[in-house]
Each structure stands twice: as structure tokens, then as C-alpha cells.
Image (cartoon, rainbow, N blue to C red):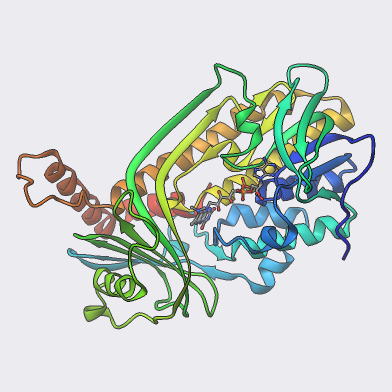
Length: 406
Ligand code: RFL
């Protein structure tokens, strides 16, 4: 496989895609297959792109999108179907076979780095253009007939790309967001909760996603592969990622996951740890002249509901269809509706992520808290929600539909 570094003197393409994550590479594949002249500009090197571990749970609709375009071979071969979650609470433990509830759909567990590797391989083998080590600095002239992307190449030299359309798929700290015109709305919410995100070199310890709702804070168990498990621990806001030793981490996980009642967790080396402040935002609108946003650049859903990579793939397909209509057939109607169509999905995902955050996290009562304080009210509502989800089939169907759906 060759990775062609782009060094044409006249640097231009009909569509310049910023970022080689799930959004940018899905879009690149779809446009290239449809014969649209496009290029992906990626800040990182290929090794980093292929190994960045993040998401793992792909919704049924995401698999359908990838299937439609012949991009799902790897995930069918190596991904694992998954349809159960287990809630461990001080009101008891219960399991929901969400794959048999609601619309009866399952997740496919497939690490994001494997999906990105598959998408990149497919794109390169089809002859797609990509420039690694190329950091977009700004998108200029998006209101005019063609936009200009100012970049720095791997040696730090400034250069420019000219495009009829620029797809901002470069995440929430990328150049696309920095280039939005004044007055663009950014709806933002800080959920006031922090997680320590961990990847452990250990097999999953239960055959389900585990959500432990503990008075000392939330703990989560997410299967990834036969040898790797992702864990989350609710963590003190502002604490550095290395504040806890591995021993302390496993002790907290054991306690919050109630291993005394449910059996031990498989311990292993902590391969990766990061502090995740649960925040959400939505940009509105997602189109500004020839600049269009997709994936995390368009909206960041807090990772509590595993929606980000799924939205990225869905939006990439909508954007590809709209750009093909416009560039190949001169029909701009889908492009005009792109922002509105995506925002419907985005707000549904945001609403469910918000619900999950309220459900999973206790207010961590301070020793000085009194029963008349708001935190007690919040905790009582949360207990009532747990009871409703445990006992009401209607509530379980609603949960399943939102948990796995988009
Ligand atoms: P990405 O994946 O961040 O890719 C953006 C790419 O753009 C590059 N880039 C630039 N390139 C050129 N010029 C610039 N100026 C650039 N700035 C950035 C970056 O190097 C990168 O290659 O965005 P994309 O494609 O929008 O995909 C979004 C997803 O990555 C994200 O939403 C998910 O990882 C969120 N998420 C999950 N989503 C799910 O659907 N299911 C899950 O199970 C799930 N688990 C998670 C998650 C996110 C997590 N983090 C990051 C907190 C678990 C975690 C821990």
C-alpha cells in the first residue's frame, strides 16, 4: 500500500476534507467512489491516525451506512455483536438485553482505531489523495465562489489549498471551527462531571457493558477486544490523570463495581489513561457558504452515550450525498438542507447523552449536605429513574431505542 503525499504545485480539489477521523475518511471514501475530486488533509502522521483509541460501540445504523458503501468488511470479520448492559446499584443489580428490546438492534463492538485503519486502507487502495502531516490553519473566503485553506506542511512551511467546498471534519479543536464567521451559535453545556478514562490490558470481566452507580461515583466497564477493556471512573474535577496509582484505580473499580457481590474483575496493566470532562456542544448552522462541518467539528456529545463516532459516520454520508448531488448533477437542494437534517439527529443524541449523565452520576454528597439541599432532591429523582428502568418495560424499550439508535 502506498501513501501518496500530495505535492502538486497547483494545490486544489473540488472538495478539501480536513481531518482523517471517522467523519473525514468516510466522506473521502464516498466522494472518491462517486468520482468527485477530493483530498484529505491530516495533521497527524499515518501511525497516529491508525492507533488513536477512542470509541468502540457502533450503532446498527452506522453498520448499515458502512455496509451500503462496502466499508464494513473488517467490522463484520472482527467486530463483536453486543446487546446487553448490566446496572449495579445500591437498589440491586439488573440486566437489560437491549438488543431484544425497542427496535431489537444491537451494537457492534469494534475499536475506533480499527475502523479508521479500514477506512484509510480502503481509501488509499482506491487511489484516494491524502496529505499527512498537513495542519490546516484557517479556512478563508468561504462566503465566495471558492474557499482557500491555509495549511502548514510537515516541515512547517505555509501552503494553500483552493476548494469549491471544504468539509470541516477536524474535530472540536480544528481549523474549521476556528474559521466560523462571527455570530455562529455554539450551544454549550458543561455537565460538571469528570471521568478518568482507562484502557486496561485485561479481558472483559463481564459479558455486558457494566454501569456501576455507586455513592462514591460512577464506574463503567466496556468490553473492547478479547485482551482489552475500557473502564471509566468518576473522578475529581481538576485532578491530573496520574493522581491515582494503578493499585488505587483497581481498588476503586473493585469497590464501585461491587466485586464482593459479583465476583472479581480481571486486573491488568493500565495502557492508557486520560481525564475526560463531560461537556457537550452543538454548532448551528453547520454550513457557512462553502464550509460544512461534520463529526465532532459539528457537535460534541459527551461520551456517556457513545454517540460521537456514530454521528460522524451518519453526517459523512449525508454530506457526501449532498456534495455529489451538487457537484455531479448541479442540484443544491440536499446541500441547502444538510445542516437542518444533521441537527435533528444531533439534538436527539444530545438529549439522550444528557439523560445518561443524569442517570449515571450521583451528586457526591458533601459531608455537610442537608436533606433539604438540592443534591438530595437530585439523588431521589435518580433513584426513582433507576426503579422505573428496572421495572417498566415501556421505559426499557425507550432506553433500548435511544441507546443503540440514532
Ligand atoms: P476525530 O476522530 O477527532 O478526527 C479528527 C481528525 O482531524 C485531525 N485534525 C486536523 N487535521 C488537519 N488540520 C487540523 N487543524 C486538524 N485538527 C485536527 C485529527 O488529527 C484527527 O485525525 O473526529 P471525527 O472524525 O469527527 O470523529 C469523532 C469521534 O472520534 C468521536 O466522536 C468519538 O471517539 C466519541 N466517542 C465515542 N463515540 C461513539 O460513537 N461510540 C463510542 O463508544 C465512543 N467512545 C468516544 C468514546 C470519545 C472518547 N473520548 C475522546 C473522550 C470514548 C472516549 C474516551
